[in-house]
Length: 191
Image 1: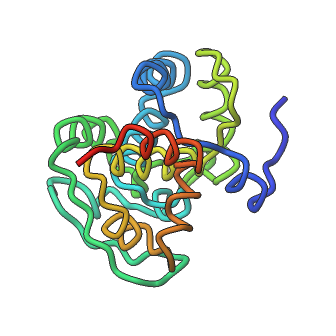
Image 2: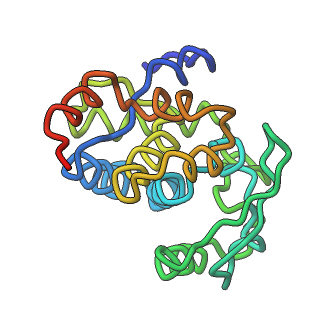
């Protein structure tokens, strides 16, 4: 039985998924052992960097047929433009399976979305199937987005703005770019 996560501990303890192989394993595990709903939640999380609370509040009408949307983030109350063109086809294929559901990630217990705790349980179930030794939680999706965005673009200032962090150091710590990694990069840096 998976215990209920403490919100502050979960954010601090979980790490991004740094291996493309493990990332693909998680996608496979969610699709095969959990559900299409859980897979799409993970896919949307790692491709947008939205907090799980914001993901779970999305309605079908927010997403259906759209390649871009504006989300008012719950924690910061700031609007954020989300681009969906990279996962548009999969999202809309999933939406067709929902019938007349209101929520993008509907609960089986009536007309409401799944809870943060249920999202956490499903992510942990999938991670157990693919033997992920590091802690995983709902914030893993956001941290994974940040890590891979940084690896691709190497722009901490842009990522800081996307994640609404107050300082670049917070962003680097958040995505797990450690002093050791920075030191290794500096050893091989040459002009």
